[in-house]
Length: 184
Image (cartoon, rainbow, N blue to C red; front, side):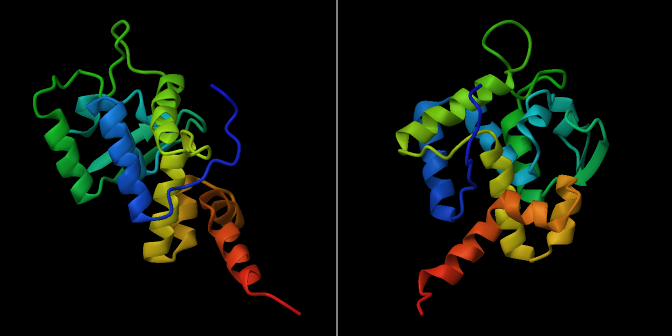
């Protein structure tokens, strides 16, 4: 996987709709589901791809051990996301991978997830999309809706609010807004 540079969140609902359209046109249902789960749960892609149906179907909360930090994390699955999960997994075995690989019996890799997102990004002429786009999009919109950086910092396991704000791109937006009409 190429080093992700300047990966951005999808900042508007229109950008999210466009990205969903590109995924539905150029990828599989599995990949659209990965994107939808990613932007609604805010997990790292490394924590999403190894999930099984039994980890999420019929559950109100998700319990995972984060791949990066090895910390156990328990959090509520939003109602609309639970409905999406139920619809997507309705005919799948509980032991099935949510994101099965076409090669072998395992799940897709983070590299494959990156490739899928890149295909949709290319279709939209975007060069600022990567696997962190899903997590950053979640964070950006969560912050815009709730204006509570402390909660988001806890969800992301960040050590400081400034790290969270920089990660989700809000700091950059705010700095840009102050400079747009600045003149002496």
